[in-house]
Length: 186
Image 1 (cartoon, rainbow, N blue to C red):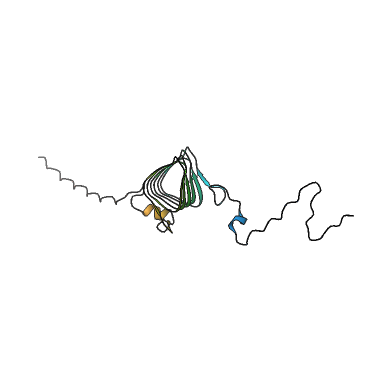
Image 2 (cartoon, one colour):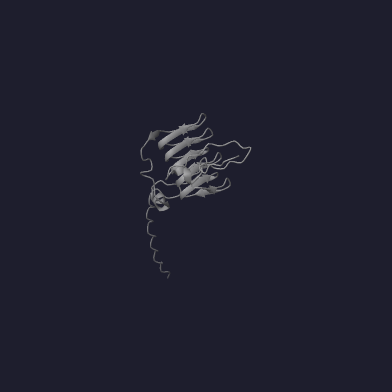
């Protein structure tokens, strides 16, 4: 009475048939991992709201900052939380700014959210700005905005003007004066 074709997949009774789903192309990035908003490589490193960092930060992965950073940052992906404050230059493949950045931003993809406050120049490949975002500075498109980005912490710390590091070498100290000979008492 019922004949099953060998070419069609078996469907349970009382459930509608679903159209076949096309397999993603080989090498497709979307087939490897589901896309999460603001994250590229899984769980990010987090600078929590009660943490203050003075000095340069470097991460090949994603970083979420909810506290304060006084120094330059180089990361694969960066999320600046609503209460976060960054005083320094930022370099990332992708950056989402919801908080405050006082310094330059160089990234392939920059997203300024409605709660952000940015004072500095932006060098970008793609830029989006939500209504309500505060931005004071210049923005410029570049095919390679990370061409001059430091590759590691040592390169960040060697740059003159980096917060937390001297921008000029310390002046050599003057030699101590020679002691005066004691006077003879007689």
